[in-house]
Image (cartoon, rainbow, N blue to C red; front, side, top):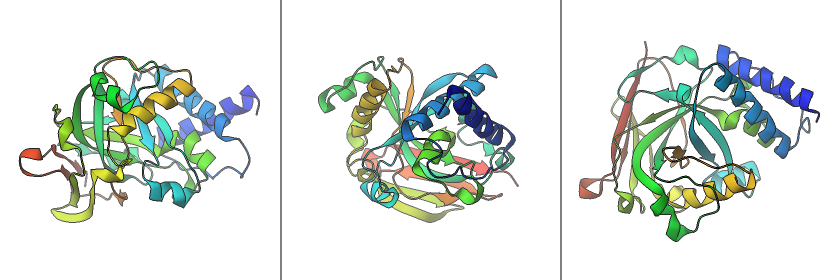
Length: 260
């Protein structure tokens, strides 16, 4: 695919996200997976040109079940900007999204720049803190249908994130219970073990993906580790909460509302 074609597809996807207007899925084989990542970066460049700042990355397909479902054997990843940040406890305006969904996650903030592959033993040393979080995903494709290449080009459906209170409770991440509630009712129940077996492994994977792409992640960057459960569709008038762990080993909770 030529650079002009990559720019054209990136513009289509950026317009869809910026105006909250869905677009048709691209024809299978229209672009390759490496080209999809080029499109993703070109699309995010439009956000940066409008004044948004890069704040980190997100991982996708961090559960084995999701990989099998999509017929892939590796993670995918997208880019985060400050324009995607939603305030914890605030009201999220669903008009900014096409067909928003939410999933519970764990978010890390880096203490040192990640500029090469890390081992599992090194990962924690590169982290400042961890927090309970929720990601708002919102495919820009009609009916939320897409191929692997489509979703990567569309920044892996990343649309927003809500992050709770930061702590140094990295030891609370082992098989911690995860509950996502809507209006006080449990809608998804799972475990942090669904995130690569242990969410800290996402740091190792992120470092390898960044290295492979010739990129580094500055200190103070966010890393969304991947979903702990399936996503839930959002609608007006909801109070959405995510609780991770319990008792003294609790990582805490995070919450937001959706507008009427």
